[in-house]
Amino acid sequence: MTQRKRIFSGIQSTGIPTLGSFLGAISNWEKLSAEYDCLFCVVDLHAITVRQDPKELRKYGREMLAWLIALGLDPEKSILYYQSHVSAHAELSWILNCFTYMGELNRMAQFKMKSAKNEENINAGLYSYPVLQAADILLYQTNMVPVGEDQRQHIELCRDVAGRFNKIYGDIFTIPDAYIPPVGAKIMSLQNPTEKMSKSDDNLNACIYLSDSTDTVIKKFKRAVTDSDNFVKFSEEKPGISNLLTIYACMTGKKIAECEATFADAGYGAFKQAVGEAVAQNIAPYQAEHARLMSDPAELDAIAARGAEKAAASAEKTLSKVKESIGFVI
Image (cartoon, rainbow, N blue to C red; front, top):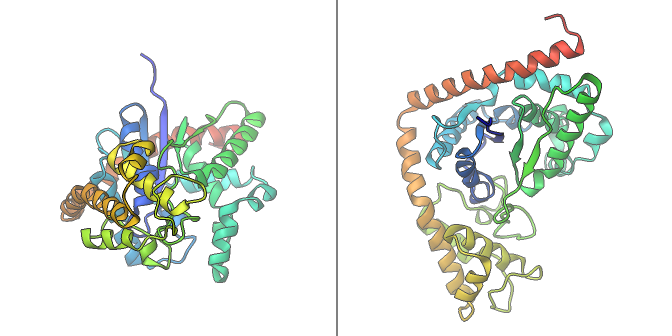
């Protein structure tokens, strides 16, 4: 019997997931779990590169786990857990720091961007964030990593570090590939369609949260920035409309060309209304299931504990090989 390839992906525990994270990552995870051995991790260690309120971090950690399950991930088919519950992530991260060059980290675009937004807290963890991400992936001999286009650079660093380690010590790590879905890989801000949709955006109208009410969703799409020609067409010159077309295509399962044809004779007002309604209709069942899961925190904690136990057992196999290869007394 052929062994299934392995998928690893993580999502931060801060805040409520956005439409962008759902369409760009989470929506693909359920499909991948049918074909691959999958680990999906709430990456709370990554979250503390920015100062967090402890109560809020714990609350959002549980909420994120509930969202993952509500959005279709079955804990019986995939391993779901909190990153901080498997100490091997932090341990391998330190080891890989010693095989990662400063010049490589200096080139990371996300560090430059996040540093500009957090000038009062440019910490070492923010700088070495991609090394922890590499440890997350390499611990599980991962074959594929579902990521947004903005994370491709981090995957390339992971591949470089793993290759460097393997060249010195032999074939310890599997070299992972990025999996980037063809549609919806990068959902943009509704207010600045040249930037990625982000839950950290100060403008609440720029982002759709999966917890938003129907009225809120439709209002946000009505306020979405477009252009002045009132023609629904996918084009680099029309980033706002192109973003809305991408969202509508993802929500309806239609191709971009079909969406263009549907709204060829419609103005922007009717188009924005239709996009908002499609999104609200699609996320309503997820919201109901999330509420049900959050009503039983003990069961959520039990799911996380079972997932962490399975993840730790797998991670320890890789970590033991790494320790032995570099000469630690084991």
